[in-house]
Amino acid sequence: MSELVTGEAVALELRPARLPSRALAVLIDLIVAVVVYIAVTIAVVAASASLDDAAQMALSIAAFLLVLVGGPIAVETLSHGRSLGKLAVGLRVVRDDGGPIRFRHALVRGAIGVVEILMTFGVVACIASLVSARGRRLGDVFAGTLVVRERIPVAPSGFVPPPPPWLAGRFSELDLSAVPDGLWLAVRQYLTRMHQLDPQVGWAMAERLASDLAARTGAPAPRDVPPGAYLAAVVQERQARESRRAFGSVTTAPGASPVIGPGPAAGAQSGYSYPGTGPTAPSSPQPPVSYGAETAPGVGRAGVPVEGAPSEAPAAGARPTVPPESRPASGFVPPA
Image: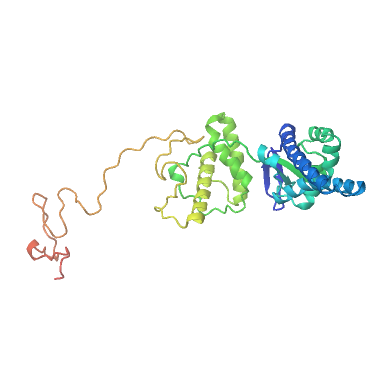
């Protein structure tokens, strides 16, 4: 990988193209250019048969410059760095900062390419590409460009385990605007691989990432929270904010945070034990909770005596109980 820094100070990880793929792309471009040049030369010779030798020579030089020099420059300018050969191999010419090239970049590459590719049969370009750390030829060095690979196999991303349920919504007030993308990537990579690391190494890495994250947020990490669980909770908070920003407000239960991704719901057992937390014991089944549909044994509705329930003598000055037949259907006792 080659780290390029854009004008906005964003680091890009691009994979530079090496000599074999670049040579194949140049060979395809040369074959196409030579075929077009032969066709143009035949047409020029047929059209200038009545002209003198000087005029025919001038037309031949013009055809050479137009097809073998101007053609690649025009194609790279209009396609933003993708010629036919590069498109077939999966390459692209970009600037040193990762942006698309313009006419001046293509002009410098094409002009120097005449010397290092056409006149020397590619020997100078091969030597420069082998010597360069990023596989650049002389045209790339003078133009400030780089040939990178566009088709890169993408590995499946690992699953980020959710934080423990008791941390849901605890870090909703953190300021995450100053945390760089590189730190988020490092935290995510640690969370996806923390169970594959040595316990001591994983703990030290989690502490370092937690301290970096706390320094960026301006709030110290809680001492009662293990660093791995702290990282997972902050990552989930960031995902929840991104979800609200993209899809609007998300309604959740009090004290819970929305769940992003294919993880268990917030408040449920996550099944992951972070270093320092230990295994989570399964919770015992709770009895069903009634919300007014049922009543406890021996207790009736307001003002309705229950047969078999213990009776108590009314206190002095207490309001008499209204019998059921005189009680209105609303369930409220009318004032005395």
